[in-house]
Picture 1 (spheres, rainbow, N blue to C red):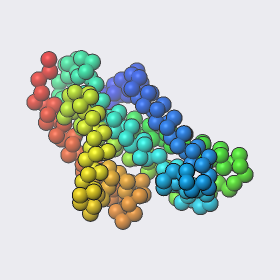
Picture 2 (cartoon, rainbow, N blue to C red; picture 1 turned 180 degrees about the horizontal axis):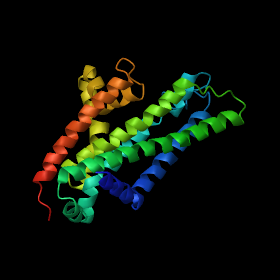
Picture 3 (cartoon, rainbow, N blue to C red; picture 1 turned 90 degrees about the vertical axis):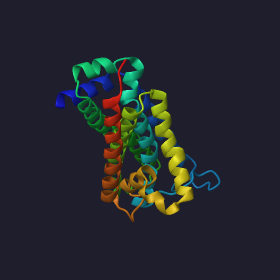
Length: 251
């Protein structure tokens, strides 16, 4: 299994998808973080939900919260895992080298989960550099404490689990575009509609519920419970993906 996971890391290093998504997410985070400071106290322009003045650890943690952006990018990354191999015609070789398809799916889940966590760390680092640099250059205090550190530590967990969830979708849907659209549509459309129709159910959904609980946005659930709930969804989607993969004919 370690060899298979290592092979997945090698594939990620030698493809443009990972670097491209990482660069795009980092650039977006840098832009949004800088805008939050640049807009300053102009309430008419301030980004919704952003702190206009950084005075407390909660303010800084709010600015550094990049989980929403990073999770979506790593989910899409995971959705290309097996579907991408189907698209490029390498899936037959992969299954010839490792005939037990469940092991291939499990290795991809593990590899992409770890890669997703690294993704979250890099994107967060970009936000920290901008925020700390801006505060230092303007002579403002930097309220960097344990609550900020805790928030920074939780985001890579969320991004890693999101990537693993995407792999489960990719295993169930062999078409790459279809897998990406399903992943994106679930987060941006389905969960939003479900939340609007049944508001009380929002906290139990994988991304608007468990995902946000991991990063501390649902304190009534808590990060540990959020991780446990998301893992349950992750295992479920991966189990479905494994069953579909076992029954699928490879041309």
